[in-house]
Length: 489
Image 1 (cartoon, one colour):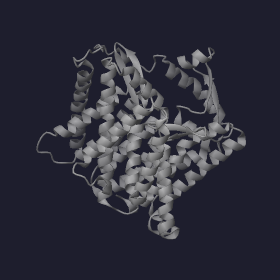
Image 2 (spheres, rainbow, N blue to C red):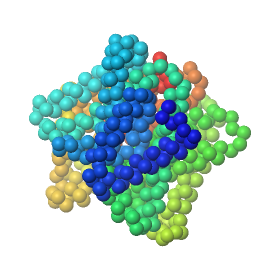
Image 3 (tube, rainbow, N blue to C red):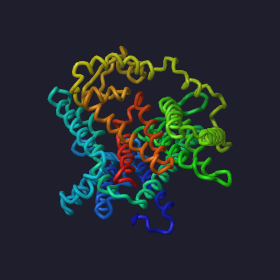
Image 4 (cartoon, helix red, strand yellow):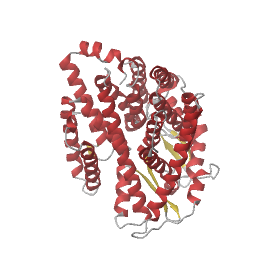
C-alpha cells in the first residue's frame, strides 16, 4: 500500500476521512464547491489507480463505508446528477480499462480475469442487468426512472478492477483490505456517536448538521420522543458485518488475558446497531448469528460458550456506552431514561406508517411481477399503492403513491430482472457460501465462516430492506468473492 508509506498510516487515513467529511459538510452550504471537489476526486482516484489499482479499490471501500448513498459530494452536470461514488467508480473503471489495454486484453484474460471463480455468474448477471435497461426503455418506462433505478447495478462492474487486483494470492493485500475496512468502520462508529451526542444535547450546530445529513443522503435522523433520536446511516449495514469479522476468528485464539480490546470494539459495533433503530438489522443480525453458529461451530460447545459470553458482555457494555453518550452532563442532556422508543421499534404490530405501507405494497407488487414473470419489466417499472407515510399524505391526501423503488428487495429484483435474473444472482451468492464452507474446512479457521455469517446477515436484511441491489451489498459480494479458490487472498 504505497500511498500510506508514512510514519503513522492509521492516523493519516483517519485524517483523510475526516477531511472529506468536513469538505462535504462545507460544500453543502457552498454548493459551487461541489463540482470542483468532484473533479478533483475523479482525477485523484484515476491517477492513483493507474499507479496502484489496489489503492483505488481501497478508496472505493472507504467511500462505501462512510458515504451511505454515495453523495458526500454531489452536483448536476448538464442536468445529470454526479455523485462522489459515481466519480470514484468511473475513475476505477477507466483506470482498469487503461491497464487492460496497456498489458494486452488476452494476457489479462489468461492471467487475471479467467481465474476469477465467479466470472461466469457475473457475466450472466450483467447480461440480465443490460436486458433490464433495454426492456425498461422498450416497454416505455420513463427514461429518467430507468436510469435512476438501474444505476446502482452499474456498481456490479466493480468486479473488473477487483479481478485485476485480487486475482493472485497475496497476504499483504488481504491485510490492507481488512485494515482499511476496520479504520473506516471505526470512523463510522465515531460519526454515529457524535451525531447521537449532538442531537441528544441540542448542540447549537444541530440544525446545520441535520440539513447536511438529509441533503447529502448520509442518513436519517428521527426524533423518537423523550429527547431520543434515531441515528440511521445506510452504511451501518457494515457494523454487524464487522462484528462477525472480528468475533468469529477470535473465538479459536487462545487468550491468556481477558480480551479488553476485542470487547471494546464489539461493544462499539453493537452500540451502532442499537442506535440505528433498524428492525431489519436487529432481526437479521440475531438470525444470521444463530444460523452461522450452527453452521460453523457444529458440536464444539466451547465456541458457543465463548461467542455467547463475548456477545453478552459486549451488549451490556454497548448499553452503558449509549447511556454515557446521551446522559453526558455537559452541556445539557435532553434525553430521558424511558425505553418507550426502543419498545415501539420492537413492536411489529404497532401499525407504524412504514410497516403498513410495506404490507400495502406487497399484493400490488406481486401482481406487477406476474405481468412478466420470466423476463421482468425492466428498470423504471412503477407500482402504485396506498401509503400511510405522512410526507406522502401531505402531498396526496388519498395516500396513493407510485414509485420504482421498493422495500421488498427480492421481489424488486424479480420485477426488474425477471425470474432468471433473480436466479442468476441468488446462484452467485449460494456458490460463494458453499465455497466459503469448503475453505473453512480446508483452512481450519473461522475467517471464512465470518464471511458466511456476514452474507447470511445481508440475505436476511434484503428481505425487508434493499441492500443486495445496492452498491453497499454488491461491493461486499465482490470483495467476498476475492477470498475464495484460485484467487483466494
